[in-house]
Length: 166
View 1: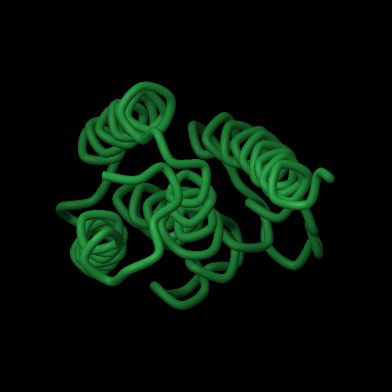
View 2 (view 1 turned 180 degrees about the horizontal axis):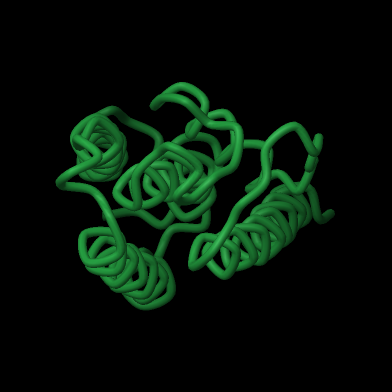
């Protein structure tokens, strides 16, 4: 397979991987953020946090060792940055429960998703605040956002420089 994918056939595996990440993150958010207060809590939230950590490590390993095309890496990083990581963090926040158990001021899955995007992008409006174990989770989400954004910009600049060096 060429190092510069140009046809749909060459992009098929990358698009399938990106679609799988999007679907998996949406399902995780949809399921975990809708747990009842009796079910959600520290145990489910901790298990979801460990799962999230394993997912991030495995995806990082995959990007660094298995994906050889810079265009594919950039595309997968973009999908991760825009949709996958914030949805997975929102799923973990939801697994800890509502009623100010994790994010003070959040009353449902939409609020948790909003809080996740605000934290991931490090905007931090201040209308909601993490509490308890979710404070460490929010810090790790902000750091992940910094790292992914930096890697995404670096990869985009490197790809542009490689394609436009005369």
